[in-house]
Image (cartoon, rainbow, N blue to C red):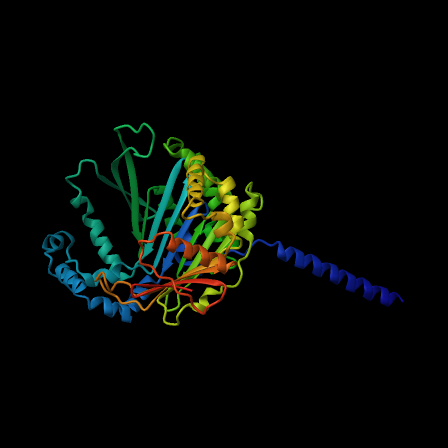
Length: 468
């Protein structure tokens, strides 16, 4: 009996421990990414509100050069003549200054293997930071340009160069003047001093309007990155369903960025601040949004939004969270399509009602209501909400196919397809028919097709429009 009690107790403890473990695992913060696998991304500051990162663009460019599209592009006379003019241009002065003669073949040297751009608000300062890792060819060219920049601007009185050493790395700072922002109310005819700093080290070029940002990066390069974006919980949670090591990624802390923008003194003085505030106030629906892209023959773009459940705009949040149905329009796109774009939205009517009732500027709303009222009059006689919005479904698509690459106006586009999912096909068909009949002078003819599906298909093929 005692053994059975002991076994039961052990099993009970194991079950409880399992439940606790599973619960704690579900609440665990995402594990930080490895700095060794993250490239320049591992140097992005943790307080960045915007992050853009791209890598291996030189490989993508090489693939482009080998593609049929590139060969076709290079066969056009205007492209050939443009390249010929560039190659025949006199760069002798540039050669004397730089020590080498620029040419198109150097273009590939400027496709960095890793590129990073970040932006952040720090108190009232807007800090941008651009970094790029180059191969030996690109690095040597940039250093040659860097060495002669003071000479190029020596006649400019408002441009001054200075430098300092930080941990044995030279940081160059350029001081210059700009006019006060034209977007500000009561802007004065005064100029403001600005600074931009940069360094070259270990094949990396880094530029920022904040020299302390560069010093932080130099320290991270020499001693290893600490407390950067790749350990930020919001960033990790955003990219949990994506891959932060894809060829191109984008990240934005939308809620935080909107707050910082509205608090900035420059924005407070702008003439149209009310319009900016009205637009940005809805950004608190999303804590952050991320995107990941892998370029290639089958380019895939994925995005993920990390919602803010504490938002004041619950009606919009409810719409954003709804998942659209499976796409239907893809079945109508030709296999040889050059471009196919489809949009799925969960509830078109609810979007219309929410946006028109709560999220329109008074002037815009007045103009919109006037336009809607005009549609209700003869000869159009259409109720936008009840006749159109209620009749359309939750998907639309665009497809481009049978494309001939040409600069001739008659050849530039041969065929494209527009598709819109419908709830009430007969009503939409009737509206289109009435619109055509309302203008007796037009030469549009409407013919019925045998297609009777839930989609409105609009195709333009060699100057002919097909509706079915």
